[in-house]
Image (cartoon, rainbow, N blue to C red; front, side):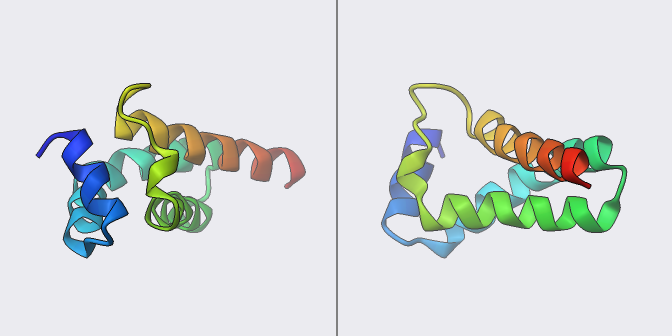
Length: 87
């Protein structure tokens, strides 16, 4: 499924689309978060937060501006950096 189709399905409330996004991108998002924080528990929470944000506001992701993986990683990297800075 294309990222445009995935986004449309997420907007329609399709949980299978969220599961597909998670299966395809969660390991990478988690890897970035754990690299930045150095803390597996925080990385799990950050990864979860990225996917919750996608589920709650799927229209915030615009496939015309970049990949879904990039969007998720950007959110995770930002949250991880903030947590690390404020520690």
